[in-house]
Length: 97
Image (cartoon, rainbow, N blue to C red; front, side, top):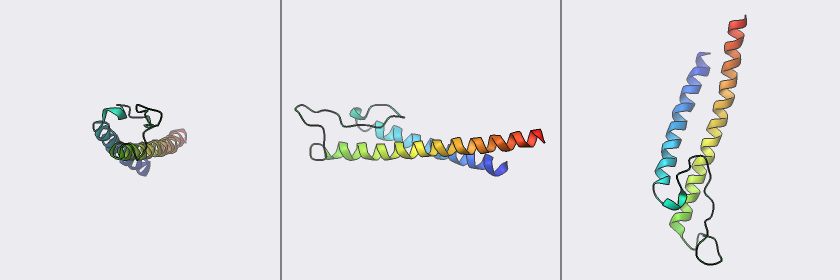
């Protein structure tokens, strides 16, 4: 149970660090939006094309970095869910025996 608790605390601290990075990236460009849980997609520019690496390199690279961080956040949340289920089962086993 101690190892599970330590794991949950470490994963929580990693999640807080990742959320700080997402907030940091959101403050760079208003086109990214303020969403923490949503990936950023290509936004339309004036004309018929979407923004590509040729149109706005800085924004596209920033968007890709933010999307990688959001993917990392989702994986940490999944690991936290699995660790919490493991910890909960150990706690229930401890109290029922």
